[in-house]
Length: 373
Ligand code: HEC
Ligand code: HEC
Ligand code: HEC
Ligand code: HEC
Ligand code: HEC
Image (cartoon, rainbow, N blue to C red; front, side):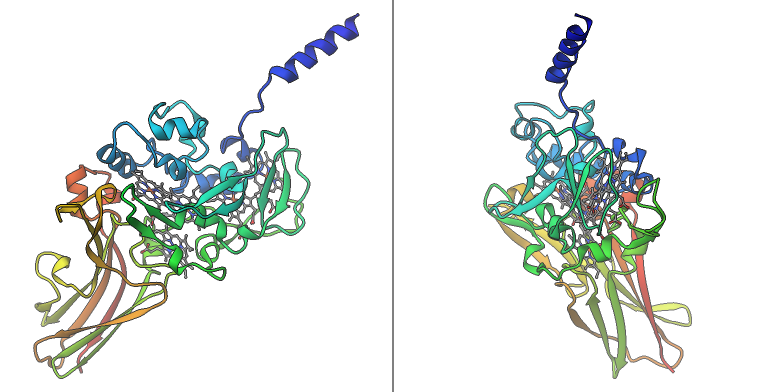
């Protein structure tokens, strides 16, 4: 009798208990190095609860719907309802505040093409011991999950589910990385460098390195310094500046950014020439920016865009040479060019009242100098 009772209790429990969607925090028990890095990354901070810029743009675009959720908080339960505005985002739901969560990324098994953007195919069916995908050779057995290697975690296709392209409701493509992506593009190589340390706490001493999960990009000074190479050459009142994009994608991947080379010529510590006076936009060659226009030809947010007003960009691994007519230089003159990068174009930051210091400040990248002898 006692046996039957406890059997029934057990049965009832297993019927009612819903398997909990794995939170990012649950991975910390074993993957502490990766978890620490991930929580500081823009993937963890991608939801409207943790990124001021995203939240303010979302407000300006549409107060009711949240179509952005499919990429910015893809692990959301009832994703469709939150996207359509039938349900509002919920700060108490970890599946939303987790942003691009650990488990979401690691259960993507395929990427499908769609016109508006690519789609991540979820392999998760609510199993108690789900399968996570990765790129390890012979992973150790875990109590938490099964492990399986999958080609897309090696050739970077897994990144394209969200980073490929995006069309707005008017059918205009407001960002595009896919035209520069092929199976040899190494997003993972540049953005997840091998780092000394253990993958898993009880590491059995075979692996000494793990793939970094900081996903550093335009918010990192070290990365901004790796964006471009600058070269200077002067002859007969002509200054040539060659800018080489060293990245695996365009200089501008996101329309809020502003990136440019500032060039200054000094003589006896006095400035005798600069490539722009008040705004970098005056220099049409060495400033990289995207500005959209709406149906009336006015500058527009991406959701209202029907075309470009300005499209000054430079594709992956390509160079351009900018030619300036400058005053005749003499011995002792110094030419100095500096790469400067803004996460949000100051004009847009002002309009949207974005105030976070680390977001509005300029990031100073590489510098190149030439002295006249
Ligand atoms: C197809 C996937 C996708 C959709 C849909 C999407 N985004 Fe994004 N979003 C991204 C990716 C990927 C990035 C990072 C791009 C980069 O840095 O170049 C990003 C970056 C951003 C940023 C820059 C954040 C920063 O840190 O400066 C803003 C703002 C933003 N998105 C707003 C939105 C809004 C608002 C929506 C909905 C109206 C939206 N996005 C819909 C994929 C998407
Ligand atoms: C109880 C411990 C434990 C927990 C909790 C845990 N893992 Fe693991 N995980 C492991 C072990 C052990 C390995 C194998 C490590 C190795 O071989 O070096 C592993 C490997 C992995 C791999 C590599 C798989 C491959 O085939 O390349 C991924 C991805 C992964 N875990 C993701 C996660 C995610 C996401 C979470 C949280 C939802 C999580 N893990 C929680 C123990 C754990
Ligand atoms: C499920 C969607 C998704 C996937 C898959 C994804 N990302 Fe992202 N990623 C985003 C979003 C959204 C942002 C922007 C977050 C923000 O700034 O609000 C982002 C931001 C970034 C950034 C910018 C960091 C910064 O400083 O601005 C880098 C770099 C990045 N992702 C690289 C990758 C790489 C490499 C992969 C593949 C291993 C990948 N992402 C896979 C959605 C995704
Ligand atoms: C050769 C190295 C390299 C490769 C390959 C590469 N990146 Fe980057 N990426 C960088 C550097 C350096 C930066 C930071 C400088 C900057 O953003 O101006 C960056 C910035 C980014 C950003 C933030 C850009 C912004 O302005 O918001 C995203 C998102 C990103 N990369 C995603 C990807 C994805 C997805 C791939 C694969 C298709 C990829 N990267 C391939 C080097 C690389
Ligand atoms: C944006 C997608 C993305 C997110 C978010 C993400 N990972 Fe990964 N992870 C990857 C990719 C891609 C690899 C394969 C990297 C490689 O092989 O170089 C990887 C590798 C791993 C590995 C194997 C370690 C190794 O060195 O290859 C583990 C374990 C892991 N991730 C756990 C986690 C955990 C835990 C989190 C959250 C704390 C997390 N991942 C978040 C994309 C992601």
